[in-house]
Image 1: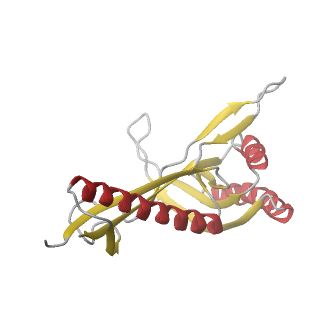
Image 2: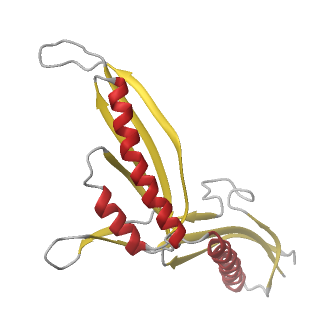
Length: 220
C-alpha cells in the first residue's frame, strides 16, 4: 500500500496583557501669519517634549522622538467666496509608554491644550516577550497540524503520521495567507475615574497573537 500524504494547516492563538503603548501627538496651529503660527507651535512643542523627557528619565517612557516638522500653505474659501492664504505648522511627538497610569495622566493634561492634536494609540507587548510568545505559538500551531493530520490518518485506517515538510502559510498550498503570524488590533477603553473631577484612565484590551503553519505528513 502506498503511503498516504496529508497536507494540513495548523493554527494557534494567544492573548497577552498589553505592556507598552505608543502615542503620537502634534503641536499644530493655523493662521494667516506664517511666522506667528510657527512660533506658537514651537512654544507649545517645547514644554510638551520637556515633560516627555522627564517621563523618560523616570522610566515611564521607554523611548520617544520628535523628528517631524510640517509647514504648508493652503487657500480655503471664506464666507464671501474669497480665497485667502493660510499657513499650518505641525511638530510631531511620538512616545512609547510602559506606565499606563502616567500615560493616562499625560494625555489628560495635554489633550485639552489649545493646539494639541492627539493621534492614534498603538498597544503591544514588549519586543522580547513578542519573540517568546511567537515561538510558543508556532510550536502550538505545529502540534495542532499534527493532531489534524493524525485524525485524517485514523479516519482512513492508517497508522502514525510523520511530518516531512513544514512551511509558512501559502508556501505549500495556494490560497489566502496570514503570513504565519498576526496580531489583532488592540483597543483601549477610556474610563472616567471617580472623584470630584473626571480624569482619563485608559484600559487596553489584551494583545491577540495568531500563528499558522502548513505541514505535509505521510502515514503508512
